Figure 1 (spheres, helix red, strand yellow):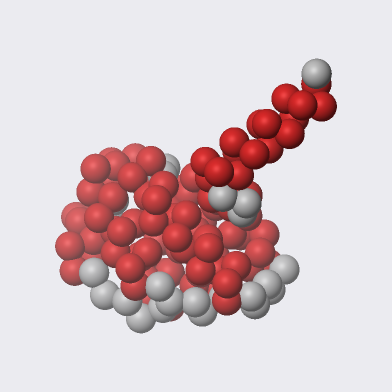
Figure 2 (figure 1 turned 90 degrees about the vertical axis):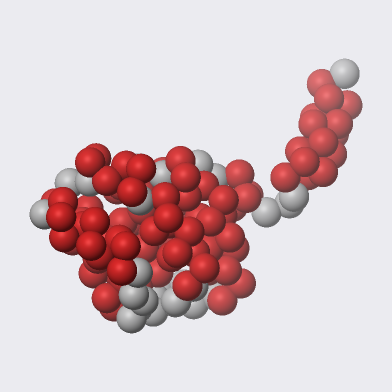
Length: 129
C-alpha cells in the first residue's frame, strides 16, 4: 500500500511542478542555493536560467535579504538577466521600508556590477538612505 502511494505521489508531483526541484524552492531556499552556487562557481547556463525563472515567479514574496542575495549571486557570476532584475525591482517598492542598510548596499551593488539601470528603484533607495 505504501509503495503504491509513493508511486502515485511521484506521478502527481512530477505532473504538477515538473521534474526539476528548483521549481519548488521557496524564496529563502532559492537565495541560499544561488549564493552557494555562486561561491562554488557553477557555470552552467541552464542552471542559472532555471534559477532566474524561479526568481521571477517568487519575486513578489521575497524578503529584502532574499532579493539582495539572489541579485548578488547573479552579479558574482556576471549573469545578467534583465527580465528577472526588472521583476525583482517591480516588487521592491512594496517592501522598501523593510530593507536594512546592508540589503540596500548589496541590492544596488548587484545592479551596478551587472550594468542594469532601473531609475525608479535607484530613486526610492536614495530616498530611503
